[in-house]
Image (cartoon, rainbow over all chains, first blue to last red; front, side, top):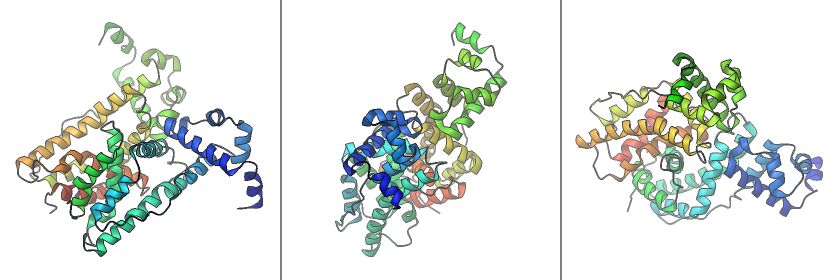
Length: 199
Length: 199
């Protein structure tokens, strides 16, 4: 971090900063990126727009920082001994309320990341890649155990299948993705496509 | 259609109406629903805002009509004799350029349909349901032929898998969904999940 950046950030406490980022993420979920205004952030967080602009420069920078702040990305230690067990455990880490929140955040950002490279990078680095890493670890162990063949072509598409369950549930079924739905989707789709045991 | 509606619509020709709807769909793909303004529609179509408001009442109504106008939904007569053949033929109906356009339209609408019931209904009735019907016909024939078991749990999730391939390709891979990608995804994921032949 440069000296200038340190000086700028030191004007608010880390607690206050975290509070602001949470409010920005909430607004993103509620109205999406395009409709999010600095006025709304200022009103929600009882700050002045001048402070927001001085501290972050603009909406894009503020949203990027807020996305980076989300999900501390604590490495999980899921290792149940079966692929089915691991994927179910991964699903059960987020309760239905958190899943609906993540789904809303994805929706709020999906359009905006196109044409905004900084936002796309923050979205990928802080929301997508940590999830992908988790899947890669789980799948590597399933291959080591002999549960999944190393050349199974579905291995490249596990994240596509999962995102499909998540996104289509919202778009087509008009229902939030719930734990029960995702567990059933994993058993019906992901495990059979990988040729892994569903029992 | 009521008499009033007929009178209002008669002020522009069907050709001009189609042209307007195409421009609205283009703008939706470019900037999304929230950022789409009546000013931009007026500029793009060289019409006056007064005409647009008189004819359609407002942005939501105009977008709903434009979505309804898209995809005439001509019933396809795909029937190749195998599930793999049918799914591949369905994919090859849209060239890569059309697929990128549909993907952009989906992205432009995904956030907006939440909280706008009329738009959600138009989106479902005119973009989602015709696709679902096509899949249902193809899957019913695969079951009749004995290619897929009628109680295979993945049957409920075919559209989720397909949307996943489509959406994740854009979000995660930062690439447009192409014919080549979707054919490979169908072979690696959809057919194995359904227990159908991939050869």
